[in-house]
Each structure stands twice: as C-alpha cells, then as structure tokens.
Length: 443
Image (cartoon, rainbow, N blue to C red):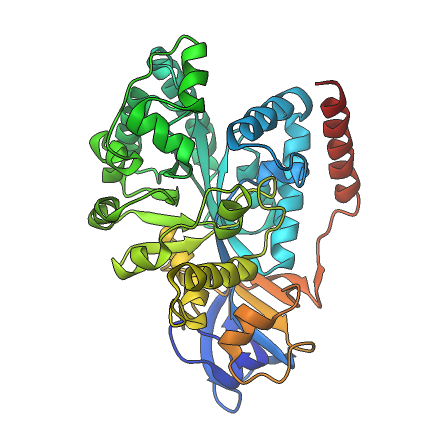
C-alpha cells in the first residue's frame, strides 16, 4: 500500500479535500480522504501540491509531434496539403514512431495519462503500449472517391486485424473515417457498418471549418474545387455535416465527434439523441481560425464532452490544463456571461468527461475507490495563496508541469522527471524536424 499525501486532493466527483491522501494498492485506488484516516502504508509526501486524476487528452495526433511549429500562418486547405505532402515525403515509420514517443513524453510531463489518438501510420498504437500510458488509437481511413471505397475498407480491416490481437488492458484500437473532405458517403457508411459489426469505437473530424460546411451543404469552396480537380464528382450532400453523419449511419455508432464548431441547435439534438461524444479542442480551433465551438450549448444538452489538444502541428502545445483555461475563457468571452463553465466543470471535462468520451470512465477520470490509480500531481510553489484549488488548477498553475504521474499505479514521472526517458529521443526528433525544414526549402 502506498499513500500519496498532498495539500489538496481533487477527486472530481466529490469536493476538494484539504490535507488529503490517496492510497493505492496493486494499481488501484484503495482510499481517498483525510490524511489522518485510511489504511496504513508507505507514505509519499507531495507537499504543497494538487493531486488529481491523470488528465485525458481526448484528441491528438502523436505521430505529428516532429511537426510542431512546422507550418504556420497558412489557410486550412493549404496547411493540410503541405502537412500531408511533407509527412509522406520526409518522415519514415521510425521517425513517426519517435515522434509519437516524444509526444507521449511531452504529455506525461503535463500530467496526461490517457490519449484519444487518431493516426494514419499506426505508430501511436505501438508508442502508447510501449510508453505505459492508456488510450484508444483510432486508425484513420481516407477515400474521397466512391470508387475507392472497397479498397480503402479492405486496407482498414487489414490494419485493424493486425493490431487487435495486440490490444492490452491499457490500449485498444478504433477506426476513424477522417472527415467529409477526405471520405466519400459510401466509405462513411461502410466504415460505420464495419465498426458496428466488430464493436469498434469510432472517431471523426466533423463540423470543423467553414470550408467543410461549404463542401457538405453547397458542394462549393476550396475543398470542392480540389476534389473536382481530381475528377471526383461533387454535389451538395446534406443540410449540415452532423446531419450527413446521421444519414449515413455514423451517429448510430455513438462516435467521438472531433471539433463540432459549425453546428446549430438541430445538430446538437442529433448529437445528444445519438449519445455521441465531442472532443473539444479550443486552442487548435482558435489557432487555425475556425472559431469557437458552442461548448455550453452542448453541455446544457447533456452531451459528453472531453478536452483535446489536437496535434502540436496545429496547436504547438499538449497542455490539457491550458485547454481547460481557454475553454472557460472563450465561452465566457463569447457569451458575455461570467458564470459560464466554472473551474470545477471544466476540470471535469479534462478528466472524467474525456474518460467518458473514450469509454474509459469505469477505470479512470476520477479519484474513487476501486478505480485504476491514474494520478497527476502539480506543485503549487509559485501559485499561492490558494483559496480555491480547482480555480488554481485552471487559472493559476504556471507551465502546468506535473511533479508526479502514475498510470495504473505505475509511476512514470517522479519529481518532475520521466523515469524511463530515452536520452537520444529528442535529438532524433530534432533530426526529423531538420529534414522537414530541408524539404520545405525545395518543395
């Protein structure tokens, strides 16, 4: 039995505990409460710190970590085209695997223990298993031409069939038909049917941009022009991107809907009625100029919402407490109401909300007896005085670097340092970044 003592414990499903302790036995939480109670055991003193559940990053692209800051200030379609071209031309599978490991290391330093990763190469599945973290890797599938449907589905099945026997208690696999501008209606429907038959979780980038809306609703705009240039027929597909997914059976899989910026009240009803979840990525949404998702409206409709960083290629950071802060500030600024999204509410999105969105909430997302001991502690040395520990976590922590991180009781970060750090990893990732820069000079 190990007892982690801290100035403040944030259970998420219960009020904060002052001078509290979390006892861990065989990888599971045995007690959460005051320090003068609970079972005896080895004492680990975290001191002036917040101890909370490990954070859940509901949406990221770990394989793109070497592309942090690589392409700045491009319009969305140009950014996507350059990003994918550079990735295919420069980054080998080993480079992508290194990038995924580096992304996980970055996340762990920020207290992230669970990941919802969408991945083309599949390296995130290996990196999460090897890195000792928890999560779901959604294998991406692409095919904007209906004629590609059968081949794309067959390739997806082959990838899933290779990975599924390698799933662990911590890491599993799902599928991700990428987005309406890269996936035909036929492929959306086929992947949805496959996911239902095989009980696979589904994630999809949806309602992210005005360009996507123009494509789906009007059959026009830059995405439409690009598809037509490839000889692919384009016509209006639905009244909205969410309605499109409903008509093709995708919402029937209760998917993770990534972004959901360009949605209206009817879309929110469809999302809520289908019991789909939403990955909210406020920093990436803002940095790419897409807008602010109607987070408060989704929450009022009782939609499950988790927070995501998106890729560091679009966000530059993997910091879930920063996402929580931005989520609150942007909602309050947009709606002009001080009471929108309290610190306690947004902390729940960064933990239990994300766990629910990924189907992990029976195991993680809150500090409760019997759950897995996924823990993150953050020092308060530069924050005091602390009147409200939840507000301190969201609004005051500088840099949000964790002092302790554990997954299923296994300590991965102690005293702010990774315990199993590959000392040459950063150098290899920098070499990948150098190769990307060289490509940029000649492309």
